[in-house]
Length: 397
Image 1 (cartoon, rainbow, N blue to C red):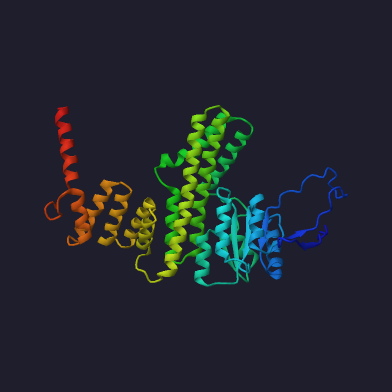
Image 2 (image 1 turned 30 degrees about the horizontal axis):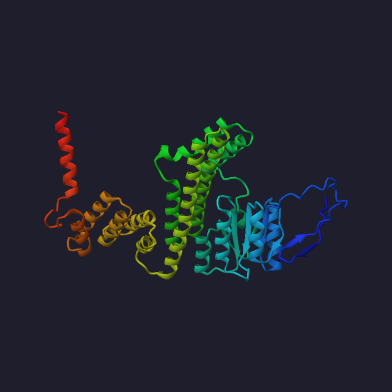
């Protein structure tokens, strides 16, 4: 069957669109129903690149939205339309590409969209900026269709996250039809998985992504960071779904509880994005730094992001396990986060490595009331805990 091509035009927003008949004209749509939402956008200032990319996107099976030639047009369209695939050419002249990716991610929040960069630039810092901003794929020109297909999820991945995403869809379907108990059961299973396994899967993927960046394995870093985002968004939607289901049942207390949990997960997703951006700047600025995780921890601590700083220092210790300065930095982060026992334990590790570490010794004395030389086997807190346990055991007998 021969496909007819609609005439194209550029509107005042810089969007290339297919001309549509005016309202009321005979068009095979006698009910004047609104057009279906177009699911794919391509942003480029190059007509040639648009022609190549649009043909390949069609071959992947995506319904194609025509060309956006400015960042403002991209953002305006995404603000009002659900777009599962966004293709960004490096030839967008009005803003740096990574700033546009950040803006898209901020706008989308919990809505998952693929953002695939197709670039004629292979500069390492350019790639790093795109990865840290949140792209889900990076393809260099000239490319083959097979290469693009490897970077676009045109079929659901068969992994643990995709199975949870399927369960999320089932729960949302139950919620939409008023089957609140069934919806609650499915939503609760999703958010309880992490608690049962006692692991932070989003954090694990995030740390893996950072490790891949250090090793300049950008493709693997993209996959890991993308999985972090998918998990964050999964929990946000599950908590919002639970809130909606309990509201439907008239339980306003649990409705408020799960709304707050969703808000907490939104904040966590924003923190991941901020940490990732700072880490990228460090990698560009200090390319020969022996341990960029330590630098990351310091910057996060100064921003009062203490839990994120703790995670950064823990990763720093994986690279430099016998560095007393990192243990001291970790102790300070724990102290500011009010994790007093963990802070003291980190100080002990620093002083065991170097008893002459002045800052660690001073903080140890401030926390325990004794110098490290006076009490090398443990702190007053340790002795208090031991004596308290001994007294408790004596009372029981």
